[in-house]
Length: 247
Length: 247
Image 1 (cartoon, rainbow over the protein chains, first blue to last red):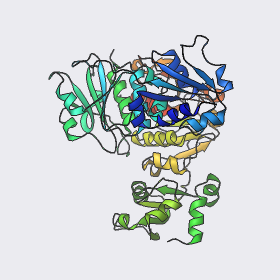
Image 2: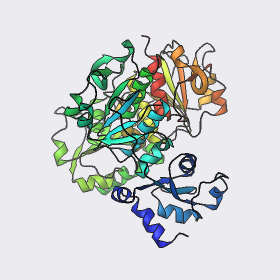
Image 3: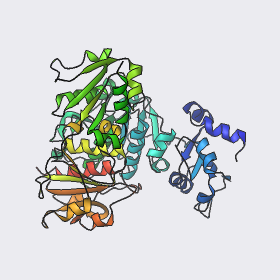
């Protein structure tokens, strides 16, 4: 059983306000905790069940580990049940964001659903993108639901939170800024290089006009059925595959 | 306010057992209800708020419409809140499933998450696929969460529930049966025609061995980062885009 102070701290980290204040966040579930321990991120504390303790790496970083019952672990976290592990990690320091980054950066405008955001961070990891730039109106990348949806990719993908239109305005004029648009160019007819910025907006809110004004090319994914649109993570996946098929 | 009998009926339809018994299902949210009313599916009853009533089509099919408060509507359904509409629809009759269907059928093995299932049905709609064949271990396509995740595509995509290995065994020997596999052929090096069957398994459960044994070609989506895998709907989206880029 953890001390009252630790329990209070873990509960506080359910909320963004306290994650920012303490510069820490929660990692829930055995698989994500193992990814955390294998990563370069700093871990403050690990809480595990007896069953999961056996699965911890033999060479643990210098971090306190406490063994709890499943009921205790569940009561501390945000998952419906947790019979494996929960960790407290330090928020990573934002790496410098170059004005003309190499590769293709993913920029997200108003993606407010943490599940979608986590899936997009995982996609950035799959394609080895240099990172993801989030508008201030996106979901919190360090919310437990976002972290869980990244399936471990939160340990590998650099994330920046920016005033998106202002940041886009600082980019070199010749850097391509792509966006998805139902009336854009058919991606199957283009040869796309993974350089510049791909901006994706949420399905319900779309791109803010200030962001849309910064696009240099609009891309369309051809469908042939009657669905009106695709989810933001699905669209991003298809576009990223199209950006990476020529190398 | 609806009668006790109607309230009891709506609550019963939260459960698969009663959806099967009554051959009916729930459609929640204004957008989905409008799609239902525009579709060929049979609607038994529509429940709306005063605000949403004004958005109903002028030419309503012959269906009883009742006006409720938001609180009443919310208490009947499965959504956290519902300030628009809820409808009861008849389960559609399964169309005949041809032994050698034209086009590319999507077959899903053990996709137990209703959100993923709904997203996959929506993808089938986007690409105009002839339909989706579900293993008996998939989530219920008529569960409220699945229906909501299809974003209206539940009205357009034929769905069959089958013993998947047994159904695959009935297909002509020369019909291609594709599946995703990390060690499969790089899709960027193939010219894929949208004919045959694309089988997708869930990320956590994969394909059952009996289904895997029926594959005629394994497909790999090349990534370049460190994420181990992609979600089933994301993978299906990328594969479907690759199947539809040559026509």
